[in-house]
Amino acid sequence: MAYNTPASAARNGLSGNLDATNYASQVNQFLGTPQIKFVYRGVPILTPNGSTFTWATSAATYDYDQPFMLSGTSVGRVFVPVLVNGAGADLLVSLCPDSAGSPDLTNVLAQTLVPASWITDLSLDGPLESSSFANLQYTGSTSTPWLIPAGSPTSNSTVPTVVTSDFFTILLGGDDNNVDAAVNTVAVCSFDGASFGLPLAGPGLPRGVVSGGAMVTADTLVYVGGASKLDSSGTAYSSVYCASWNPDTGAVGAWSTQTSLPQTVVAPATASSGETVYVIGGFTDNTSSTALSTVYSNTVANGAIQAGWQQVSSLPVARGNMFAGVLNGWLVVTGGINASVTVSGATYYAKINTDGSLGSWHAGPTLPVPVYGSNYQLVTVGDNLCVVSGIDGSSTQQSTIQVLPVLADTGPAAAWRLINDPRLANTYFASGFTLDDQGDGDLVVTDIVNNAVYVYSMTPVSLISVPLPASGLTSGATYHVTLHQRPTGNPLNDYLQFGAGVGGLASTFKYRAVGSAGAWTADPSRSILIQVFDQTAGNLPLRQQLSARHGGGQPLRGQWHRRLVHPAVHDSGPAGPGRHRASRGVEAHQRPPPRQHVLRLGVHSRRPG
Image (tube, rainbow, N blue to C red; front, side, top):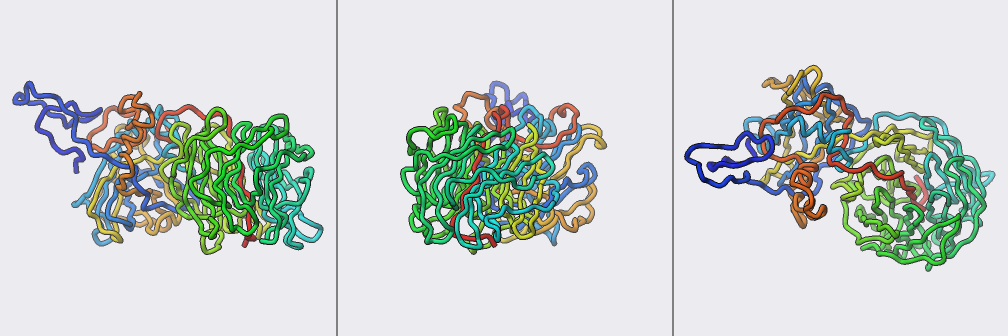
């Protein structure tokens, strides 16, 4: 099915469009641009929830079919995880109805051909590469024993506040569950790129505290707020403590008392950008009865907080137990609970100005699994924020990693992605470490039940955004996304592979010989990890949103084609240069500055388990 409707008049077309006509009868007619249909950003209606990521067998040999059950009555576009080998291949993506468990290719509802040259441009190291449509996936994990720091001679310390700096993780305070009282312990764990070290004691906080927030800058640790114990009878604090920090050796200096916050704050989200620190939301006491929307900031110099705390742009909502992080110049806040202990999956983000102040807050993509934080953290790996585990509305610890790419020019991507591993339901705390400038990294998760540490190897994966606009569909019915490639070079060297995961979707993928009309064979356990969006319009079409954000200063291809392949079915031009790529990316951007330190979260009023 051609996306652009036939035109009788001569037309200039778009790059690679061979459908333009030129007949004698059309002499002196104006050249016209082919009919364009707006494709909106849409709302995700299908999000995969896979475990260990793998690449499906070379797609030069097989066509692929991924069935899914539709929620709603329309489809706008899909994300497809793609790995380019050599010069790649043209990719034909189709949306089809179901016919006895297989795609009905005689009744294609929508279809888009993505030229090989575009896919290679959008992949890792390509000229339009970025993480705007990237998805961080884990390709394997290791497990080793690990000891929880002691809170007292007879009990371990639980629910510490945790912050990561370079290749160190610092655990601050927490609760001694033997005596139900806060502890002042500080412990530092190091990561050598392969293994996570046992906690080593550092100078203790001036007093026992739990459910506070912590931040780290290049040379200073900051601890704010919290309470004297975990339950509702605990006394809330507005205190602020600072200690020197050496990110090269992991050495913590002596703690000193600093200028207090303007009010008591329990279970805030906190983060830092350069020398500026932020305290976001929380509760005024240990009962959760009064949630806050305030955001306080201050600067840190020479191991001390400056004179007074400044109130900057408040959140649109009042919540505590949120997850917050800074990445590529944006402050992102997600999850949490309100004063009624209602769990939220809402995400908000604000641009950080050069003076540390905040721009306006914007609504971002909703968490697929709404959670709030206890001792479960938001961490950064490459250009991605990761919410590890968390507690849902039924007080159940989740076994998910929810991933959101964040870009310097546009902020968060359109949707979170999900990774699942049952071991994550025992999470004690998590830390993220970026290992190279390609975004590869390790996610370290400690297990409070089994006294173990898991190191997840993470790698960015390209998600090519493919328009497949179709409406008038049947909610609850099965539809199929099929993937067929047309090699433009040597099919033994130039081809595509598609990302798969165990348990990613309700149905596993099917495959058959490329171009065959034979029966499909089901994979026993894996799904192609597509993500499906509807046609929800929002404020502007995606094309106009991008033009507005970039001020119209770039040509159409720079604003539109970088992020969304054009939905016309046509043959491609010459293939891109032959090269093998791990995949990521969709638009050109500068590599971000050195990774900014991100706080994870204090805890409030619930014990793990």
